[in-house]
Length: 180
Image 1 (tube, rainbow, N blue to C red):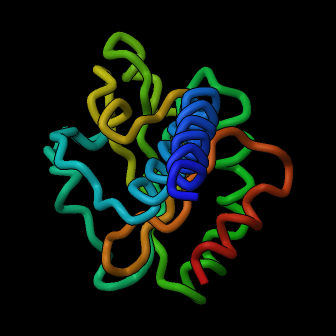
Image 2 (tube, helix red, strand yellow):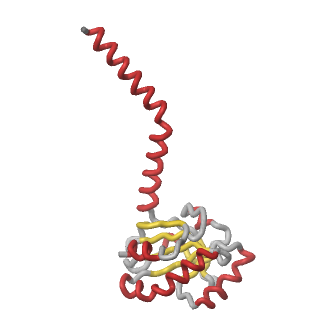
Image 3 (cartoon, helix red, strand yellow):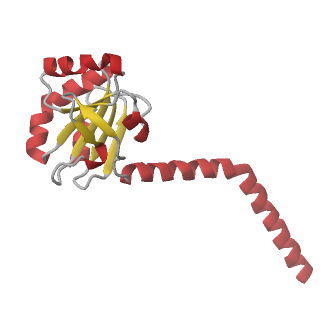
């Protein structure tokens, strides 16, 4: 009887080992995705030095809004979906501000030679957003932004509670819901 139990334990251990070997990549991949999602959604902003469109230096780690939410949108002047999204938000932004106290910060990833296009475009659309320039992509990389548009919503404590890449018409509703 003792030999039978011993053999059963060896077979069970062998089966578990084979299972783990064949499925370990899947298990690790799922674990990494879950961990990355948790880190992204609870992370604070990294501290990167940028300039606004008026030349004032800003430390991104010090961005705050008196306990109210913040929207950070990475965009570029050449990005049509970015412009559509920012125009759509512009239409409802005053209501969002009244309801939630939100502050909108848009971060242009235009390269240095194209940065002179940002201010005229923002002024032309009448956007009252805070505009930061990230010509070297330092903040973009620190936030793990791969493509624009890419939006982050921070709660009143500065924690990232929502992030989304891309834009489809009506997508601003998801941003609004993240503010609440």
